[in-house]
Image 1 (cartoon, helix red, strand yellow):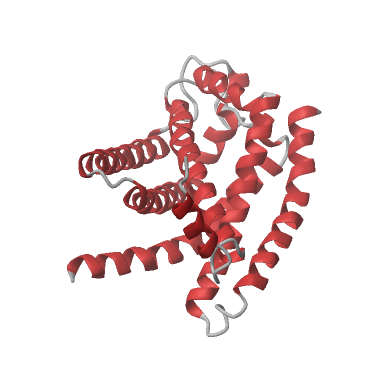
Image 2: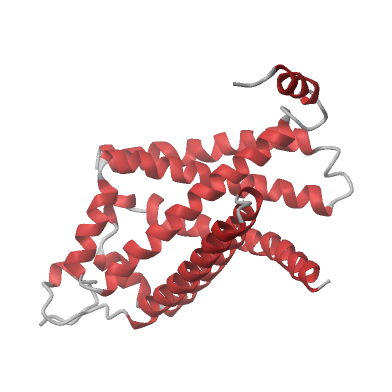
Length: 133
Length: 133
């Protein structure tokens, strides 16, 4: 009974997060791959410039959490569909859970602790708003 | 070696309502694109996390994404994401509307058509960034 309720919650989550992820990821792709120089324009100055803005901090946090939880739940279903040996199944599911928690914590820390103007870095590598040394 | 009995069983099953038709292929593609996107996501969180280490390290890591080969990989990634997104919407319509099941085949072709349109918008621009920029 309890498992069923949890499965139903996961089923609903996949659909809700899916719709939100479409908006988040299409925006992410437009800003990072379509605008200006596309992938060629992505460097420290670009990322640090974005993450100095609270809007992009929370945007990226939502993207990180939703994408990882959505992807992890999908991979859980795939593992449960194909891996029938109990021990291997348990190992893979544990690995999946550990990597997801690790990446969510790591990613969130990076988003909120990044210094956009680290000392001792040549100005041409930094966002334009960094004070001249 | 497939023995005769197994081959006969397979022949009998093929051509049912589900097997070999749009519903099956949309499921197969949804699963394959989902798994591929998940593994990219793992790598992507890690490569982005190097932005916290040092500007020059991050720029070096990002350099790996700017090669022609990786540029093609990014095109494949976006192709997978767009299909997964559109087919996800199709799944939601099948689940939540009265008419969804009746039109699931038509909607699969709508998904493919929209995929072509969106890729036509993305691909030339991305390839120009990768190969001309």
